[in-house]
Length: 281
Image 1 (cartoon, helix red, strand yellow):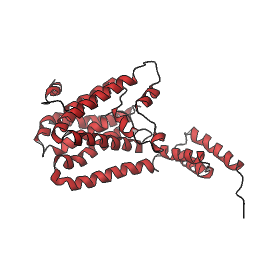
Image 2 (cartoon, one colour):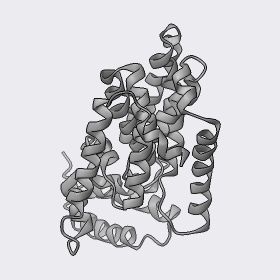
Image 3 (spheres, rainbow, N blue to C red):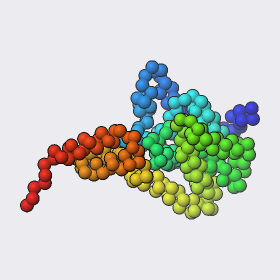
């Protein structure tokens, strides 16, 4: 019950927090407007895109997917902590800076999740951990953060983060653990910039480095088998069959069960064999 009492603790309504909360609820209702419809199509209509679209240059879904939720419990959990923690943060640092932080954290956590998987994931959890990380580090500078971010809440966030890791390992649940951890890191790095301006230079350097890594991972991610597959397909479509064959082979080296890569590689070989030989001068 102590957590629930915090819903009424804010002295006035933080505007950006309120808008984000309403947007997330509205998008949840929009996604579920047709219970018998295609869930993937509904998510796409609400702003989700698959990894291939993002790797091909559509970066805006890295932000919009943070506002999408498919499960009611996921929405309720994230919106509760958005109000309790995000509302307090907005009132302390101002609405403009809070909005910039939320949008940048959404971009960063989605990009980091995509860098190690085949999807950005959906939901506000990564941003929520960024808010938590910022306030956690800034408690010593901002007493208001220490009031709302009690030891019990800190323990809950850390327990949930590692609990999600265990659930991912022990089951087939698809949880955005990288978004959680990267959000915590992003918030901690941004903390001095937003809560202790006298220490902003190290924070600016850290944020610049973090965002550079995020952007780099969107255009060059050779550790990611899915990204290699995307490059292979693009080479195939562009008629660069030998490059496509080489990249499909790399996919199969890492994932021998990737039947799609084997099939596409065979098509690329056939196309290469039927291509006219280059003329000699």
